[in-house]
Length: 109
Image 1 (spheres, rainbow, N blue to C red):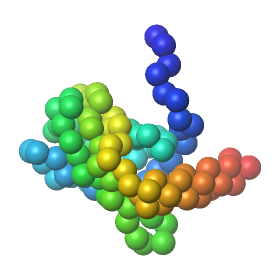
Image 2: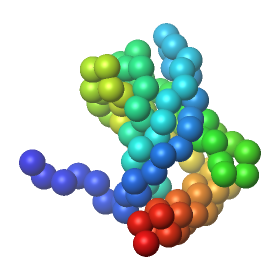
Image 3: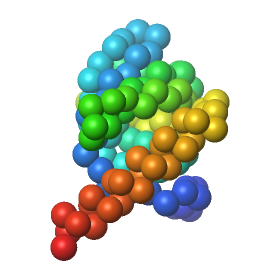
Image 4: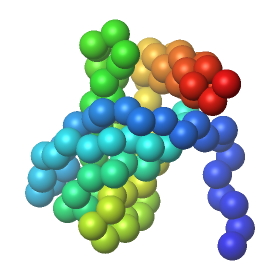
């Protein structure tokens, strides 16, 4: 299988909420990059569906992003590819990833 991902991925544990056409659910982001993420949650989505995602930050704030469902795993969750990000969202996500990398490295040490 060919690796299609071009962005560095960070293993994380981030609370999130998402809203799609048929459902609104909570979940846990376990894999995050500047281009997308994987969410452990209900799989009440369809491939190609647009999802509004809210990531909870360590400071109690939120980052709101839109993404397209790339694939789903039955009873496990789904992968999103972020779409339509403005510069402000991109910068907030980059800072959040920097924090997550540091936090993961500190926890592993």
